[in-house]
Image (tube, rainbow over all chains, first blue to last red; front, side, top):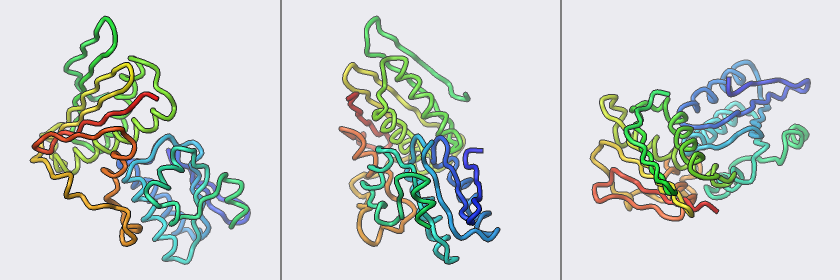
Length: 111
Length: 148
């Protein structure tokens, strides 16, 4: 399972993006997030610490997830982006769309 | 790995060239990226930054070739050509579609595009490579990645 999800004591659901987020598995991530929202989760953290690369479909999936979380009044944070991934978000100007924290620990503290 | 590898022409000295045939199946994109990375690594060291750029642009180009070029037609395939040179790697991706006009692809950075869930692929390729060239038909993209 490339997108394991865990829930903390303060009701923050962390989904870890392992390997890559691309056209082949973006629906899996969207489903994991949807399942969390259906289960009542409203604080979501996507942790990219172990992520190697993301294609434009993966970025599109994140935009879609962000919309869904906002629609239910939830909060989404991204964390653990390495230098290359951070540059990709800046390049596509998506860094201004998302709440991005340096580390998962910082993101958890930010909810 | 479900790919046919029609040729591999190792030279006594670098460069080396490889070809990979990828079925029209979006589920194969990750494996195609792994195969290209493996081929490049066999030729020469691939730095961390180059690995990221290579994986991203190959995933992007192959997905575009499958979805937009071949229109997900399983009777078609995508060919990847890799030319490992001492200072750069050239990667060509060819689909069996009618081609497209890359100049007609809109800029994805407008404010109205920020919430778009697609349309950033070619833009990303252009910024992660040193050169992008299309054939006249528009069904082959050649991407140059410097090794630095």
